[in-house]
Amino acid sequence: MPKHTKKDPKETDPSATGEPQKQSRGRKLFGTDGVRGVANQPPMTPEMALRLGRAIAFVASRGKSRQVRVVIGKDTRLSGYMLETAIASGVCAMGGRVMLSGPIPTPAVAQITQSMRADAGVVISASHNPYQDNGIKIFGPDGYKLPDAEEEEIERLMESHELDEARVVGAAIGSAVKLDDARGRYVVFCKNTFPTALSLDGVKMVVDAAHGAAYRVAPSVFTELGAHVTALGVKPNGRNINRETGALHPEHVKAEVLKRGAAIGIALDGDADRVIMVDERGEVVDGDAIMALCALRMLRTGKLPRNTIVTTVMSNLGLERALKAHNGHVVRTAVGDRYVVEAMRNGGYSFGGEQSGHLIFLDHATTGDGIVAALQVLAIMAEEDKPLSELASQAMQRVPQVLENATFGTRVPLDSMQRTRLIVDRIEKTLGDRGRILVRWSGTEPKLRVMVEGEDAAAIGAYALEIIEAAKQDVAGATA
Image (cartoon, rainbow, N blue to C red; front, side):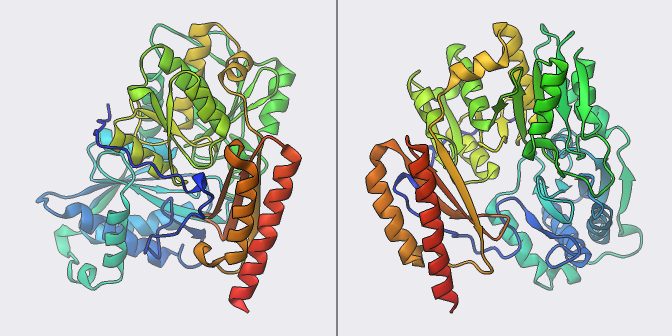
C-alpha cells in the first residue's frame, strides 16, 4: 500500500481570481505529463529516446553498486516499437537490465515497477492523443511519477557530456528480458482492489478499451469477477488507438449500453489511466461526478482523510458545493494528475482526480487508474444496491460549464496578454461568486484553453468566445 506523507497542503487555484495560469517550469523537453510529440519528429525521435534511456539509467544507478533494473511498457501505437527499442538500448548502454512488459496500461507499469522493486518504470504512450503522436513518462521505484526536479536533472544530463563519459563495455553492457506475466500480474492487482465479499456475477457491462493498452486486461478483470462483458475497442492495429472510440467518444459505449440493457458502460483512454462512465440510462458520468459519488460514500463511512479530496482548477464548481454540503473540502491544483498526486501526498489525502477521468485512489494505486476507479464505483453500486444513474444524480448538481480551445502557432506569456486580462477582469466582476474563469495554455498541445462557469449557460458561452477573440488579438499583436 502506498504511503502518504503528511505536510501542509499547498492549494493552487489560479482560477479563483481569474489569474491566467503561468508556465513557470524551465524544462524544454518535459511537459505536464512527460515528453510528448509527433512520433519520429523532434523531440519524439529514436535518437532522443536512446539518450533519454541512458539518462534514466544513469540517474537510477546513483548510489547503487548493483545493476539497475528498468521496466518498459507501452500502448498499441505503431511507433511504440521504435521508441521501446531506443529506450531499451539506452538503458543497456549504461549497463542496466530492461524488463519489457509489452502493451499494458500506464498504471500497470507503475504497479509492476513498485512490486518488482525496479529502479524506474517507463511508459511509452501519448494517452488520449491520436496514433501519430507518442510520449514517454517515467515512474520512480516507488511507483510515482518523477517530480519536476528529477525531470529537470534528466534533461540536464541529456545535454551534458556526463553520459558519454559513463559508457560501459564488455560484460558490463546490459541486457533485456520480456516479462511474460506482466498482464497477469496487473489483472490480479486490479481484482484485489475489489472487496472480496462482493462479486459482479451477472452484471451486464460494456467496456471500451479504445484499441489501446488495456485491450486485453480490461475485459479480463471484469469477466474474472463474474460480469457479462461486451468488449469494444479491443482490436488494435497500431493506427486506430483512440480513433472514434474510448473515453473521448463515450457515445459508442452509450449506444451499446442502451442496446444491451447493460448496468454500466466503462470507456478507457489509450493508456487506461482514466475512465469515463455511462449509466444504465445512457447518461455520461465524467470524472467530477465519479469523484462526488465516491467522496460522499467515503465521507459517510469515515474513510476520507481530513474530509478532503484533491482535484484541479478544471473541476466543476458543483463538485465543491456537493462536498461542502456534507462538511467536505476540496483542494485544487494546477492541471495534471501528477500535481493532484503531489498535493495528495503532501497533505496526507487518499482520494483525488480530474474531470477528464483520472481518478487516484492512493490506498490502492500510485497514479490514475481507469480500471481500479471503475471497480470502486461498481463496489458502491453493489453495496448501496442502487443503479449508477441514481448514485450519480444524487451526488452533485453540475454548474453550467463551457470549454473553448484555440490553436496558435506560438505561445505568448499569459501575463503579457493585456486585452485578455481586461476581458477576464470584467467578466469576473459580472459573475461574482456565482462562477469561475480559467485561462491556460495546454501542457501537451499548442492550444489555449478557456473555461467559464456560471448559472446562465448562454451567457458563459458568449463569455468564453469573447475571451478567445481577445487572446487572438493579443497573440497577433505579440507576433506581428
